[in-house]
Length: 80
Image 1 (cartoon, rainbow, N blue to C red):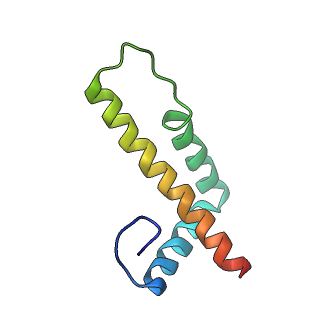
Image 2: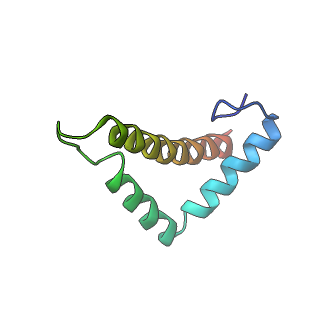
Image 3: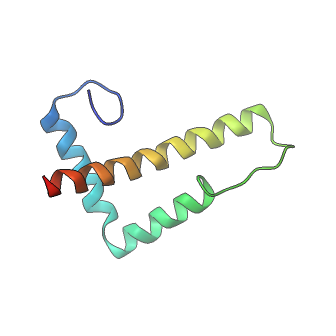
């Protein structure tokens, strides 16, 4: 089972994580990830947010968290 919960081989999962880390370890990639976090994970919505808007935001947060999870996975693999 992959880091994202989808079935794939360990080797395929490793390659995906390493590719994501490679993309986001550059200065530009780090700035993009910082921006994505600021508009998703770090964003606070008021009580007036609709159910649909909240679901949309949670989907965005999930994707950004998955990117971070992939980066952390690649770092752990590197340290093994």
